[in-house]
Amino acid sequence: MDKQTQTEIEAAAFRRLLAHFQQHTEVQNIDLMLLADFCRNCLAKWYAAAAQERGEAVDYEQARTIVYGMPYQEWREKYQQEATPEQLAAFELKQKQKS
Image 1 (cartoon, rainbow, N blue to C red):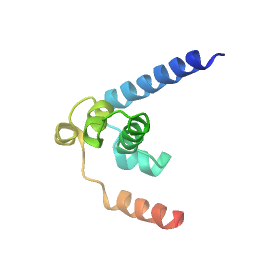
Image 2 (cartoon, rainbow, N blue to C red):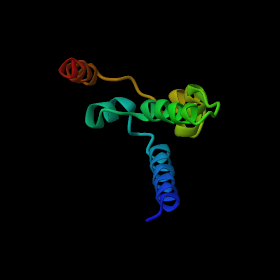
Image 3 (cartoon, one colour):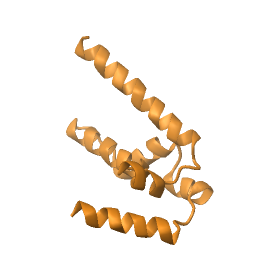
């Protein structure tokens, strides 16, 4: 496979991942962090960093809008739920285990 085709396939898979996350708003970021150790915000940070590495001006908030499919504040108001005490405890434990 040539590099251009590989890049196009990777980009298509990434767009599908974003669409999946945008369709499944019931999946909270805390759930993603507990299960996969990354979340939508992580994707936005990676997106912004990749843009910067290529000399493109995409800041974190712009990247979050791309990842969430809407401004982050709007997504939070519509879909974000409070993390439960159990989720927060599990997150803290996971963070301690990484140190």
